[in-house]
Image (cartoon, rainbow, N blue to C red; front, side):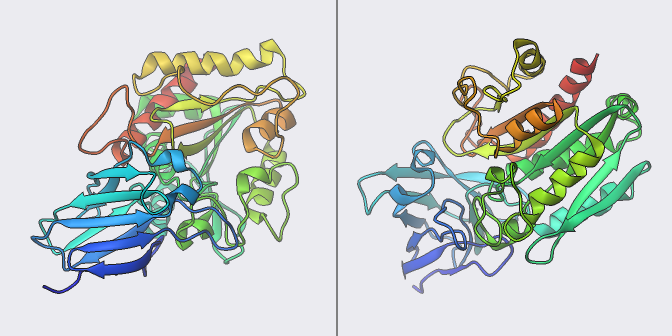
Length: 375
């Protein structure tokens, strides 16, 4: 029987094919351009119908986040609409760390990815649909190094300046699924939550901060290997024009509340990271963040506070990170929302793990928590 064929020649495609034999393949991750980050994969297999696939991705001990592989099941789809999970196992001692994916497609084509992809075509559909909604203004903040537009959607007439932005790290595609959920809520004229929020707030929404990395199939960097979430103290036109454009727009509007949306490779939970350790920290200032955290935890079982990143000691915050810079620069209640690549272990879903659908539902809960926090 012929060997399966593996392709990556599409938006966010990424894998290196070392060997194929029948329905098995040895694969390796490809690093981000001009960077050592490697974790994202997205590839298509054809010639698969009626065959049990065995796909081995090796060398993962040298990936960006080796702790992301134990307990992880690869995402798989046969129609690119529904993304389930393929049974996967990780052996740290095999070939430098190997993830073995096993799956038997019911059709001739199967797609595999680190998380359900969010393509640039879908991004443009999202932006166009939102921009055509009543009361929404489109704004091009600038251009990326690959010449792509940096899109921003603005709405609302309230005095609170709210910034929502996602995919500084392009491989964290759950972040743009979250954005799709948020925009569906905020542009729905029949939704009382949207009406109340748009009355109280002026929203500035950047669904994808890193279009170049997204299209290139990067995990964490832009077209020239820059980690955008380490550029917020001193962004530059040649290394991080995306951050420079967003921060300039924030300077013009001011910021009262900001949420930077991400995904975490290792921790199987949804959590928030705050701005402990910034120079202007006070307990009263920090309580604004903690109060939002408590509200969100009460509103949805998908959010929790037991698992997450350790708090930064006093005076030790890295001001090159967005949440820290935005809190310090504008006196804003700022936070980083993290969703899992794996599953939410408190409420596991054996079919999909953490999914696009749950990311979108979480967005509504986050917005509802914002309204309660404002009141």
